[in-house]
Image (cartoon, rainbow, N blue to C red; front, side, top):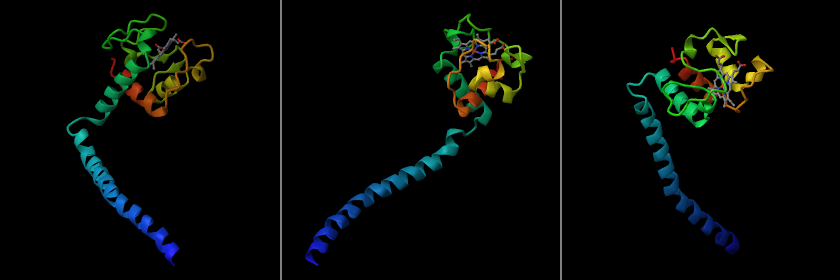
Length: 139
Ligand code: HEC
């Protein structure tokens, strides 16, 4: 009896101790969820995605190989210029420039053309979609 009570009381104290922590977590989660619609308030969803894509384009250093107007320092000459890429008919000269093909191209260029010099940068689908949304604004 005594030993089970000795065991139970620290346990109870632990539960009691974590209850405020749990309440704070719940409140924070609710605050975050409630704040979410505010984040995109007045901003077009696709515009936000394109902006995220522009940021990723910077972070992945696409500009070391491509000239990309609007991205500072993006003056690479290894690959073709991405100026007006939104109007280009073919990607890598092989697949029609459509959103789904662009996402596939970005995630795995060799899947479209095994001989292409564009490296597979290991983009996630979410990243490729954001970058694709950004590139589609270059028209
Ligand atoms: C190491 C150099 C290199 C890097 C880094 C690179 N690319 Fe490329 N990219 C190329 C080359 C080379 C081609 C031309 C491929 C071909 O024609 O087969 C290309 C082609 C493309 C094309 C098709 C363009 C067209 O006109 O056909 C797009 C779009 C593209 N890259 C976007 C990106 C994006 C976005 C990134 C960053 C996430 C990136 N690239 C990073 C070298 C690179």
